[in-house]
Length: 220
Image 1 (cartoon, helix red, strand yellow):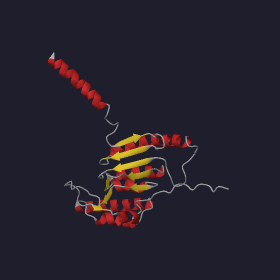
Image 2 (cartoon, helix red, strand yellow):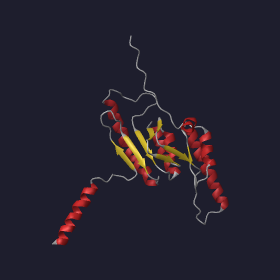
Image 3 (tube, one colour):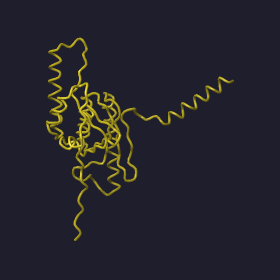
Image 4 (cartoon, one colour):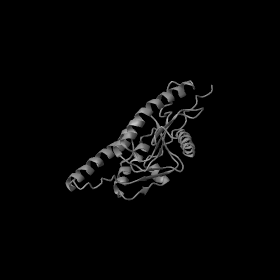
């Protein structure tokens, strides 16, 4: 009888905990509420599953943004703006996943944000760079991509891999309208170190791009 009570208590505890578990441990969606637009948050190291999750959630966010605008009498956001915020708190991960998600962010004119207390490091910076507007209140750090030694890939093949990564990441940042000096800063920093960017660095590299509110029509 005592064991039965413990079993029942355990089931109740696990059921209560389940109510607080997020739908995804990495990519989460928060719908619009009041004057707050839809938000997608990306946390943790980037893996392939995050691309699949983000692709699905982005569609929901686009629909949420359309409703958000319709409730305010707008058929489209003001030029250069989007009504979906993507908040970032990640140490990096797959650069290929980051660039794929980044292209979705740019295509849909989402905004990217690193809030106070959050960090955006390594591959995460490719997400930040994709925002139509970008805000940084936390820390941003860069370094050169890392390829683990698998004991099979020859030095020559690894150099070719690095050359491919170098070319594609440079092209991506140019695609996002950022200066090649940011790519140079990344490649100059060893993969086992982090070069933390100052406020001046963020401005110089174009990683802080606040969108001004639309101007109001002049009153006759």
